[in-house]
Length: 72
Image (tube, rainbow, N blue to C red; front, side, top):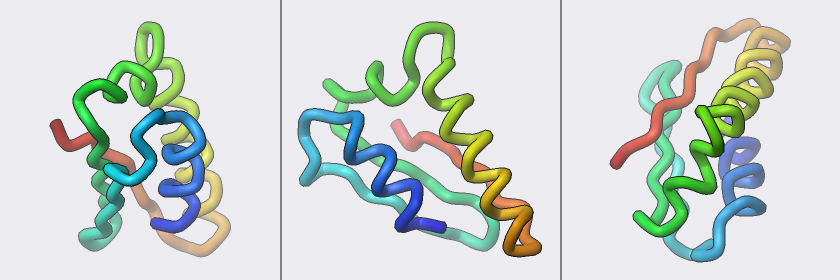
């Protein structure tokens, strides 16, 4: 699951080397550079909401229930 989130987030940001995704149980935490934070959240949170929807669908297919959080 972490590879999926890292792939999506890396495609969206400018500073690709500062992307890190950690998994703690069913919670995936994403860390990006401060400059790229807006690109991950999007207007009115649409991009992060879409990322969460994709992860939720993929995790349910695996029999899990993962969620995505952004670390500031």
